[in-house]
Amino acid sequence: MATTKKSRNTGVEPTHRRVILASSLGTVFEWYDFYLYGALSAIISRQFFSGVNETTGFIFALFAFAAGFFVRPFGALVFGRLGDLVGRKHTFLVTIVLMGAATAGVGLLPSYESIGVTAPILLIVLRLLQGLALGGEYGGAATYVAEHAPEGRRGLYTSWIQTTATLGLFLSLLVILGCRLLLGSQFEEWGWRVPFLLSIVLLGISVYIRLQLKESPAFVQIRAEGKLAKQPLKEAFSDRTNLRLVLLALFGATAGQAVVWYGGQFYALFFLEKTLQVDSAAANLIIATALLIGTPFFIFFGALSDRIGRKTLVLGGCLLAALTYFPTFKAITHFANPALEHAVANAPVRVVADPADCNLQFDPIGKSAFRTSCDITKTALSRAGVPYSNAPAPVGTRAVVMIGEGDNQILVASFDGEKLTESEFKLSAGAFNATLRGALDAVGYPARADMSQLNYPMVILLCAWLVLLVTMVYGPIAAWLVELFPTRIRYTSMSLPYHLGNGWFGGFLPVTSFAIVAATGDIYAGLWYPITVALVTTLIGLLFLPDTHRSRLAD
Image 1 (cartoon, rainbow, N blue to C red):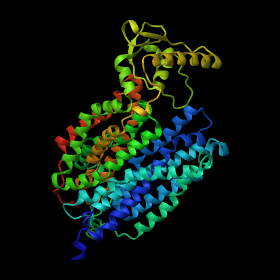
Image 2 (cartoon, rainbow, N blue to C red):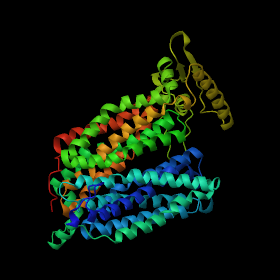
Image 3 (tube, one colour):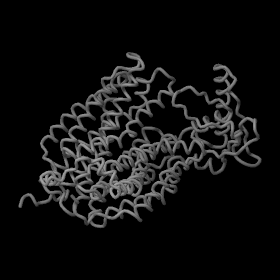
């Protein structure tokens, strides 16, 4: 029969292509909307947080971005419940409309100069709505596709959805690049709004396609049989057996998958650009090329999981990430900024300071001034991208930077700026930074990566390996989560661990890892966060979670 024929290219039955296309395309647009904010954070901070200093404004903008991650699990609860009560199709129609409207709202929102503090408040509200919508979107799309998929092919079918986050990121970057080229200097002033407003067009396309779909057959069947959950949240989380499974899915699957996913894409970009001081355009090009190389493997590993199991691939990817992150990132340093690697090996830097003089430099309200000698020293070294170790000094002494060892060691004394006026502080800081920079230059620490020394093929290959690990853990995860839970509470049950894992464990990886690096001075210390989470997931998943690739979907 015609309906049983499969596409030679995709392995998907023709009657199901529209299901996958509609679910995947809509989710691409959702991710496009979500990533626009992250890509334009610097401009947004100037537009909506101009009432504070530039650094604090950028921090606020990043907090607003993080707010979207924070509320994703709550969106999973709200829309997961709705999806189990009224159906998958109607629910992810609501999520995409909410996402598109909130994104367009950012494009229409007056700036701080126009309406004052109301502007950032409204911006954060819109970000929260985006996060809520995304929390409901993924679970609906994955559940809908999986419930259409034939037995033994759910990994392949749902893997198409797994490509959407990467494709959405690409789409957002391409639209931003196109607008920058077309609008030139006007982009910073008002042109940044255009990518947000274009979401209205994308929203119209997505809604039209999804309106053509029918409800999933599994949901239709349990509705006809009177088996719908009357209280999905209660059934999903008050039942001890199902709650245990939700927690196991979080800690034994999605937490590790999330840190590998964010580590291989976002943290790798951050490491290249901020830590190794690689030119921003080059860093983005490297990651984009690695993503292009890796994206087809979402489908490959999704299909492979239908044969050898979801658990094998997801936990295998977590373990490989834990074992290879340190050598991979060290190799990236070697090929991207060999001068920094050479300087660290031959002239290590140490900050000798009174521990009581060193503060955690985190100021969400912009009121603190980090002017102790230790804080001044670490700020200067962090901005220069110079790794350092810490050593205690006697109480009350000023911090000193020790560069190199033995007879050739250079000492640069810091200063105490706590009692200085603003003008005096700027003058002293300028002198200290110039002296420190001169000392670092003398022993070979580069101010920026020498782009002529960057080995593009090797750095792209190493980043492609990180992306390959992403595809290995992310390709099969949707099918695994869908198969773990019964149809009547599937949307609710699978959405929560997915978004707790990806929204919290993964979404906060960059800021958590950066905090570890800033505290220790070790540019690789931040890797301990994803490595630890990945190992915990591997252990829990191996011991307590079943593999489900040969099971039928339970009612």
